[in-house]
Length: 170
Image (cartoon, rainbow, N blue to C red; front, side, top):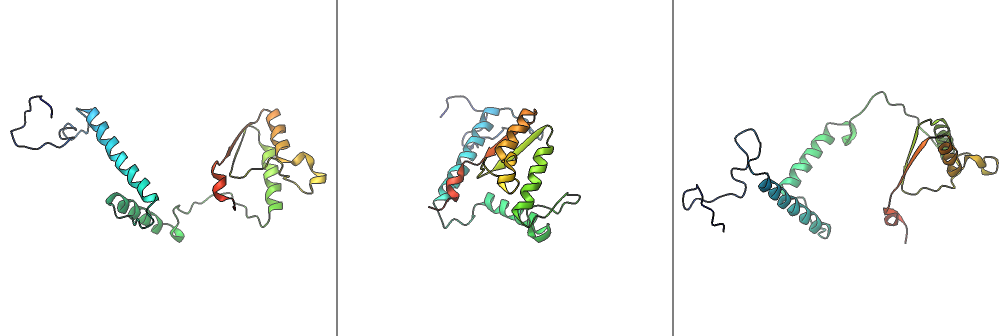
């Protein structure tokens, strides 16, 4: 307990963050107290989530979990097919039935790139031939296309997911 004098009458209890916000403005008189409170709340939620990883019977009973679940359900119910995302219009979409046509379109898009190329994948093979047959299209191997575009000054960014092992058959 602190030996500091208190302006509170004897016997009156204090909340840790009582008086933290000054009036209705929301500005803090004691930001260090608020930072401590935020860290405590975040720690509580982090430990709870970690505990639930090992608890197969966890059923989202905590108030903040119920609130998030209700919000997600409301969002899904407001969208077509109960999707998390709304229907958007004006999209340039093309359906591909097989890989041959898709990879041909990828090769065309990469070849047309003038400034930047972004690639994100969880299992990327640089030896992938974008055009078939490989014997007649050696220059269309992915690593060769990217090298050619880099030499033209196109910036190339590649992200490969680290968690590949989770998806491998063992």
